[in-house]
Length: 72
Image (tube, rainbow, N blue to C red; front, side, top):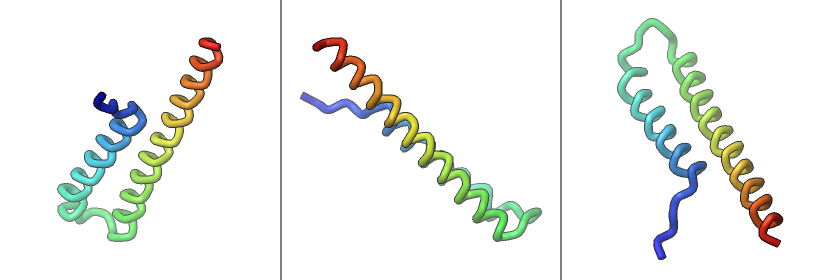
């Protein structure tokens, strides 16, 4: 049986790829802000994606726990 990816995993992975692609494309072309601000923006984006992954994972765990309790 093929194991299905959880929503927390595929959504966070998709956003991680998106943020990285946008950073690779747009940050080198942006000359209006300094390098420090570019790196801070990129780091903040990665932190937001990681926080989203963590919150969704906890939400899935709570849902699985409730389903197990309802089945017993």
